[in-house]
Amino acid sequence: MGKKIIIGLLAFLGSFSFLFAQVPVQDKSELEKERQKLQTEINEMQDQYDNVKGQTKKSVAQLNILSRKIRLQESYVRNIDKELRMIDDDIYLSNVEIYRLQKQLDTLKTQYARSVIYAYKNRSTYDYLNFIFSAADFNDAIKRISYLKSYRSYREQQVGNIIETRKQLAIRKEQQFAKKDQKSKALENQTKQMKALDEQKKEKDEIVSNLKSQEKDLQKQLAAKRRRDSELKNSMMAIVNREIAKAADEAKKNAKANTETNSSTSSSTNPNITTIRINPRGDYLNLNATDVKLNGRFELNKGKLPWPVDNGYVSGHFGFYTIEGTSIRGENPGITISTPSISVSVKAVFDGEVAGIFNSGDEMGVTIRHGKYFTTYSNLSSVSVKKGDQVKTGETLGKLGADEDGSGGRLDFLLMIEKKNVNPELWLIRR
Image (cartoon, rainbow, N blue to C red):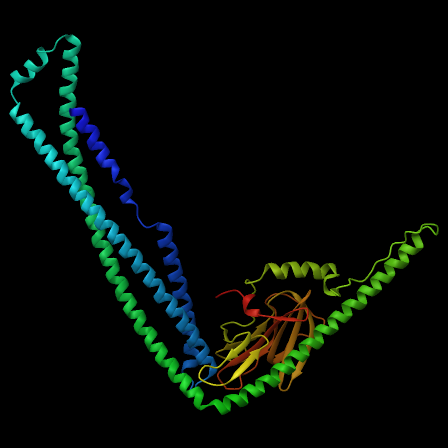
């Protein structure tokens, strides 16, 4: 009878062990990392916005930065929502566990009380001795003594189980208080972030309203930008075409020289004369061993290239865009990088050769060839390199010119893979 009670008790203790499982720590850790990353980006965007916020005239740059900051703020609020759901799950599981432990403790107390009452009623030494000496034989007496020891051990174990269950219950209740406190702080943070988000949206609406009233001026600025972009693309394409043609001529010369060498060394009776043909795809920028090496290295650095200017931020993204609240549409062949001040150093983002220097109105530009990749840095007030120079990553190419709205410096940064324009922002390191 005593053994059955002990076995049943142990089974009872083990049957609910799965309820101790918590929400995976990894999920919580990843959520915290995401929140920290978002907070870092929000702080960076705030620094960028502070640089242009003081301008009397509302600008597209202000709108772009604030819109990006709002998107980050919304992501931050969603992150808090996820955290709150996880805390609620923790609290629910904790409540279930507290209920289980309380029921278990009540059961243990009841069972122990019964065993105490039984022991009290049979406390006479005579009863114990009579129980032993009434055995049928010696082996039966040994079994009865063993049973009495097991029964005593079972009662001691009952006390230990009660103490351990009380301890677990106290720990769980303490964790429950901590979870509720964590939820309270998360709700407070959520309220704070939602308030900040509402303020940012109101500020954005104000900027959109101002820009809408400036639509005619913005249309003029956009027309000027289109002309500038067209000149920039033409200048860059001319340089790229010249480099491709130069590489093609070199390839033809090398092919002709190799053919003549093979012809002179081949037997006149041998019908299998080796002939080197030009790449039918016209991929001449991959024929030079130095270019091939550069291409491989450049490709490996996608998302790792340094910024061409210090303290710069993207005020105009690559591709088609719409100015919110207006009918203005446009397309950016590269990215526009703004800086708080002018005349800052513009630096090469990768090793290469200066393929060309051009003028576009009052602006100057430099194009660097990195194998089949070309980077262009436009709106320079001065240039400190010349065509044919070999430059290293981080080497100064010139000084940055001013933006036309007087808000600071502006760099038009383009990236081409042979004749194809691509998004340079994807190649720069994330700050």
